[in-house]
Amino acid sequence: MSQGKEGHRSRKQPGFNSLVFASAVGFIGGWSLVERLRSGESGRSKSAIPSSKLSAVISSKKEQRYTWVINSLIVGGLALLALGIVQQQSAPSVTFQDKGTINTSGPITKAPSVALPFSPPVSLSIPAADVSSDMLHVGKDQDGQIEVPSGDFYNFAAWYKSSPTPGQAGASVIIGHVDSIDGASVFYKIEQLNPGDEIYVQREDGRQAVFTVDAVKQYEQDNFPAETVYLSNENRAELRLITCGGAFSETEGKYQKNTVVFATLKETS
Amino acid sequence: MKKVDAKSLIVGVVAIVGIATASVSPVLAQSNGQTYQANLTELNGSGTTGTATVTTNGRQVTVKVNTTGASANLVHGQHIRIGGQGTCPGPNADTNKSGFVNTVEGKPFYGEVKVSLTTQGSTGTDSALAADRYPKADAKGNVTYTRTFTLPSGVNAQDLANAVVVQHGISKLYDKPDQYDGHPRSTVSKDLPFEATAPAACGTLSSTPAGGVNTGGGATAGIESSATIALGATALVAAGALVVVRKKAIHL
Image (spheres, rainbow over the protein chains, first blue to last red):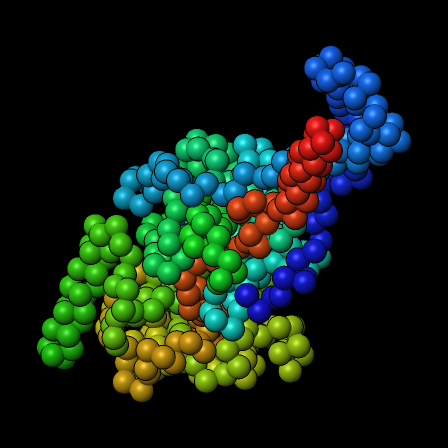
């Protein structure tokens, strides 16, 4: 919260210039179309009204000015509406359904001896959610919550450095923003992950830890099951991905829920 | 002596019940307690790393320590240390320039032994060097430790907020690589070789994060570019109004 939204400007509107160009082309194209349609319309109306009466009431100059203004407003309005619609991004789903089962009481699929030693993560890749990011290392903020990336690093994934390193026994925690004030962020699509999807983490020791998604769940931020999420019952190498979800509260300036992906170490290299 | 045996029996039963409860229940701990976790990183080139968690329930704590890369088949002393800077010593802590950070040199950083993470019996400072009651690494160098006990007198649960877990024992420093041997003596006991008490892994305990994570700016929630859309709609309405106005003008 105290990070300040001003610091979150690193993500630009995607392809804004191309949108303006497309609008301009659309404007010209739309102009000729509307012009043709309107001339057809006025042709019909001319047949209804005697041409002598029409020319007597309106001077052709005035007619042209009206036409020009109306055409501008119609085409410009349509272009702006189209631009606005193109810029829509689906929000994190408010009707999210939990998927899968957290691997808490099942058999220990990976004994501690198979788990990797301490080595901080350097990057994260989740093809099923279009995630590819270098990794920040973060601690806790003044409120005791995990510090979130800000400024130039807003759209990076971040490993919580008091949790085990990915591949080590225990629950390794990686967080990322779902969006900024400008658009989608690094964990925008992780709520779309399904059990069985794979998560790849590259570590400082050059080894890679591959995790398989067990479950994707959402929790109210005000009633967050911290121990279920941040800790692991077993000596098993697990991973948690955390981002925001649910409805966005404008008054609080934050999302009401957290989306949590639970995963278990599948293999290492 | 009989009293002591009974006591350790009770402690043992409590530990077993604690482990059994922890493995049966899907919920890790009572929500009124606090859990601290630490990443143990190597000291003195030991190659030993791991994790520690301490879960409190009043004065009762469940401590788990898991390390890999520890000297195989040997006992590893381990303690919760309090009263220092709450940090692990870096290479600069080697004030006597021996090439190693010994247990005494680390004290300004990690503090004094306050809880001895023994497998049975006392967990107080009197057990700091109880070499026969500490966990032994398996043949692969893994140490797995879980024990539930009541904090020894003089230690409060809130002291764990500024505490460090240290595990000792590096057999490869002198002479035979698989034994605690060699001439140098421990800086904390003339009866033990330096290798047996050399700090091998260290980590600062940190309470688990409070609540969730504030990971969104809200840009994709609701309607984006609402100003653009409003302007477009206004233009269309104005166009419609003008058409009406003009038709009126025509029909005048």
